[in-house]
Image 1 (cartoon, one colour):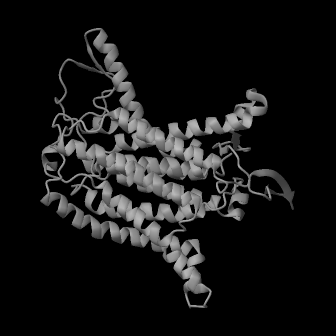
Image 2 (image 1 turned 180 degrees about the horizontal axis):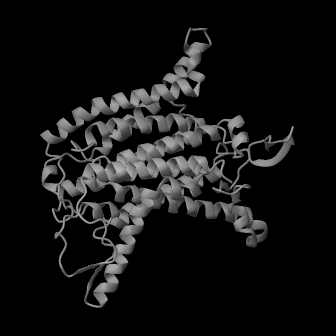
Image 3 (image 1 turned 60 degrees about the vertical axis):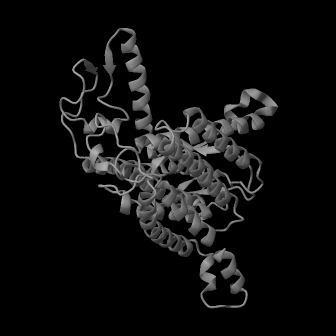
Length: 421
């Protein structure tokens, strides 16, 4: 709203109003505003939740040895993240931009699903919303996002299709006209564009439509996978919020270079008109996460709950899809990926053991971060652990910090892949 107000005032020569057209100015202002909102609103939200009994149930001591210390800590802290992300975007973003609208819908929809899950856990049953309903909500969002990017005339790109040599230096030339395209970026490959339409070339003259259908299915899968991966990663103070802030910062860099035609040419990636508004959104998102960490860092004063974790993963997934970098997510979101894989492996291996009347486990606990906080002698003696590491129990703050370090290294690698081909 303020964006349109100051652009209007610019017509009358009001000093300073022209600054609002610069992404750098609006993004930094958004970051500061979201950080302040998160910290200001967070304190009041925590106080209100404590007064109204909005606390998470005491955690199972067999899983979390520090669970007793966390008794009475409010949950649903994801509301802090959502408010601190949405409000600055409404004030400083271009609300006619298709990508900004998609991100706002993504945030509010997944926050609603997560809120329902947290509310049911607090008021009715600790199992929360049935998994099928959460998966259905994520799938609906994936379909809506995929179909919007397919059908909207504003969701276009300018492909990097030609490379010519100028004074011995390769220069990328983009198409002069924006087009609808199903191409995406492949890391570590020189000619790094993959077209979903080409994958579906066996469909003959219908390959373009089939490519878009494949794109919609991929979008739905990515939204569900990353959203559930971030949900799995949420289990320690500051873990998911810190990892997500790092990932979002890397995505902000990728969104910025994708929206800047000179940088897109230099990096030989597609130019995506309008994606600069994703930088505004991601700055609000990063500021909200950092402000939330003020209260969520060990020892946590509030937990994000599914209101936060489902929303965070969905935001990351949708941004990556919009900028056509979804194939980089296994690198960028490796921590989320390994958390999900650890649960799948643990479950399937345990089922194999049950059929033989034995208690088999791949890890001491799953998701994988729980394996690092199991005290000696805490597991039953009849458990057969395939990977019995580490020995002993790490401090929760150390586990969280080390996961952050891993995410920083992988985020840097994801950005560097634009030049490593």
